[in-house]
Image (cartoon, rainbow, N blue to C red; front, side, top):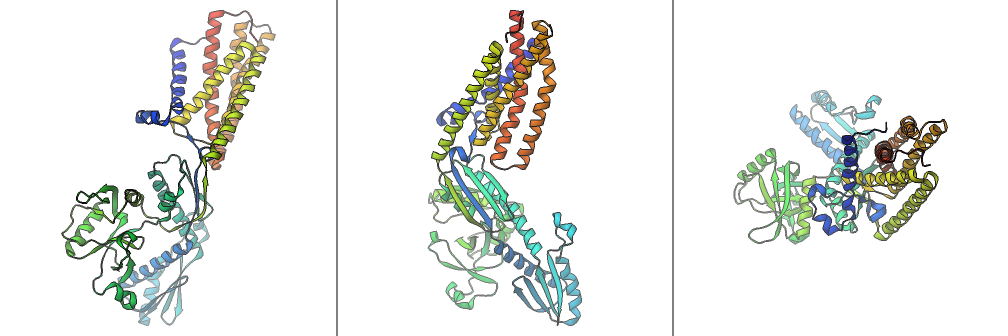
Length: 534
């Protein structure tokens, strides 16, 4: 057990050294760190409670979700009735759905059968209950009512939150921040925590915009002023221009020619002629084909670029654009152009998000937490070091060296993955120090017991390592199970504590049965002790 080959010893030392080296960049200044190669730019990220940052709680606008659901239902009813060539005299939007009156009584039953295709069972956990998203009822007199159920609205809100979390995460990551915390809270809320971001204004702007981009033709049949007085064509609407363009009004066709969903990429840049900031975009194959068709058929007409029902710009189509790319200009600043590109790349939110809670954690609180956490860590470590040396002498010194390597390896592993360290994470590291010492205590006490039975020093040391293995593994496996449960079921600070504890368990087992044993085996080989120095 005490014999370790040179190749195995080299592998143990090399493993510990490489892992510990990943912790070194944490001690570099920011300027030095940025000069390192990309693969070496690994460090521990301080969490919101340590370095401060922005805390924002968002809520999905349920009324907007309901309105969009009903408008979609109206369009689906119109489309299905046209498919079966059924005439109707009115299609009215109601608070909870739509109502349509069929012109001919003979067409009521075929229309009812076709419209019932819109009523689908809810997926997920609700599917077993038989609930449906839409109720279709024959109200008599040729009137068919379609109502969106509350369960259907709830399911749509849940889906909107899931989609919004992915889009919010992409937008926040585009800011260049590290380890943002983005998670669901309840049915319709999203928690966003961004460590290190002291100015939440830009974050609020990015998260507050739905970023629904559409390309639509400008209606020239009447002026915007006449349309605003109630003379707008039924297939057009009046939309305001952006403030950067002077806030002019535009009469825009409701029909969407190309959707922002067909965008493949968007990047900020500068106009080669005017040197003004712009946003260049590129469509996917489907969007490029539709964009080319629209520009070919409408040369000479203004083509509006609409973002969240606001006209960014309405340039005139001078010639067909066949390459599937273009640019958006609108008196942008560099930051505005960059933010717009971020929004377009991340995609549109399925529903507006309302900020219902906002907090900025200052660096003073973070520094105070760091200092107190450091004091607790130093004090706890010092007491453990003193106790272990006083109790086990020279072997206690070896145990302390192994514990130091253990802590360095924990920081090295955290740095490898750019993991976030929170105050509970520091508590997990302090707990790991105690557990690492406990593993050595079990080994050393087993050596004492073997020595009392009359064994020689070398055989007692060998038995101490071999027979304590099962006990240490049992203790660490049970702790590991609890830590894994905390990590997967907990959130925020709980997961930070569990993460450092899980890493600490693996490094503790490694240092106790490889690194410590290597040092002890080397000492035994060199000194051939006659008694255990405990």
